[in-house]
Image (tube, rainbow, N blue to C red; front, side, top):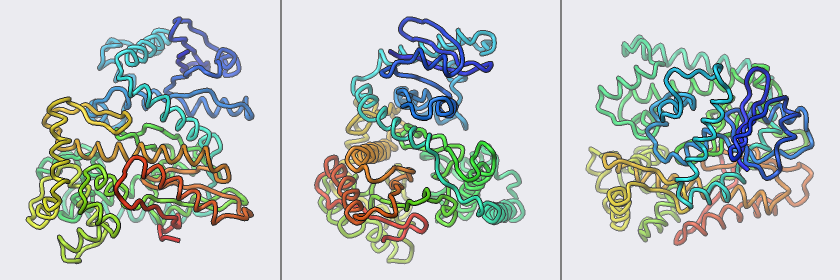
Length: 488
């Protein structure tokens, strides 16, 4: 059965989508009406988990589905989700004509729930079977994993707050000062200012605004400053949230989103711990008696592209280092590996290169160029592109340049999630803690006698999933130090 829960006026409201039956009450009263195999849709997952845990600390959570994540998966269109700085489901329902412009939630909570139920039911009815399979086989098991982690929370070293916050505030002030005094950009933190600057420079937004500034930071000083400002601001927001009562102090309970991005990345909010830079990660610590294990896919997206394109030259380079090769061939080793990684992402995003060496480098991979053309042609023929298991995205012809990026990043998200599920099923000695883009943070008992063996099993699990989806390359993962990303 599918049900919707929504809290308003101190009560939880429950809608049975199939029968349209409505009930309200405390978490205890609502729980009595939830069966173990019900699909529970909500916009307030974190609130529900917190109250559920207070009343039923030893009881398993029901099957929870975040409505925002559900919409990102099944809507299949990027732009309605990307145009809003902070996506709002209530506004979305009005845009999709489920609600009138004049409707207010407080006027009729029951009507609001019925409209949410109507949206969910109609969305499922018209969905591709592969997306429904993806929901059941990948997203719901991932939700169980991340919501159980959210329920446990993460240990935080609160003694580091003052120093980290002060240094981050000073850094942010200096960056904004430089933008204002030296470049006459007086409101750099405003999204409208950032969009206006990008438009003036003729820079097309590829992915997020943050990613766009990152992709251009080596060419334009102001892009570098905007990128640093946004990274520092995100980090400061996460640190400040940790100091709030709800943030956690010595323990924090972030909001995990299983389909947090268009490419289906798992994201964290309140606080956004994934925004912490290496030098600030030390605020996160293992539970008492535990130590961290941090595993990272090596050259993840580059390896996926090498495999799917079946370009033997690129596949051979993956065994060495594609990013080092870019630096050597394009810039004669004059830049960094990170710069080369940015150039690779720009290629995936369909950015047109002005530099002849940059263009020539990627054109030298014959099958890669053919594969890129094939992906873009799929947009012309079918109008969508996805991973090898759902997560399809509908794109207009004018957006076909980002098709390759979605194909590769969606595949990366799928592989990452399958690896997390494999580890959860097969390696009970370690606990999942945190997703970090292409890496995952686990913890293990310090007294565990066979830690090296557990690490080997962890690496094997990640490699096995990678190899299943991406044959033809010498798959590589590494165990690193979470605090400095150095390989152990």
